[in-house]
Length: 112
Image (tube, rainbow, N blue to C red; front, top):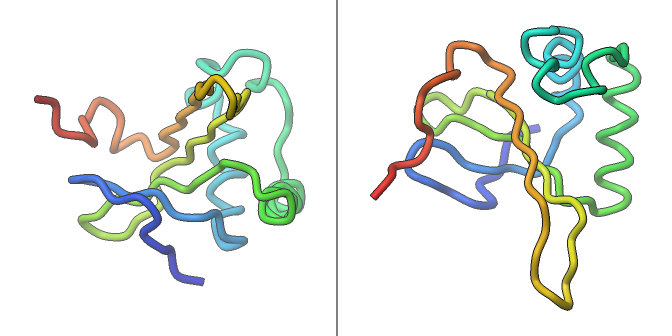
């Protein structure tokens, strides 16, 4: 399944999650360098099947979780999510994981 440009920035875009993203998610979430900054999640084992099930649930439940795709090459580099969404007061918390280490330390958005 191709990635769809749901929200496009200057260097990356957000796409709905696809089942094809599951192998990368499992790879990232089993890498302590990626997960230690996430806290307790670092020590929860991740499997391909588990990540596939997560993506199915995300789609089914219409959760606010997106794949982060580099515009330069359409490469899956991470994922982001909105949680604690409060539609009445118009606020939420944002979580971002850049799993592809070659993209660490690179500004993916242009700062003013």
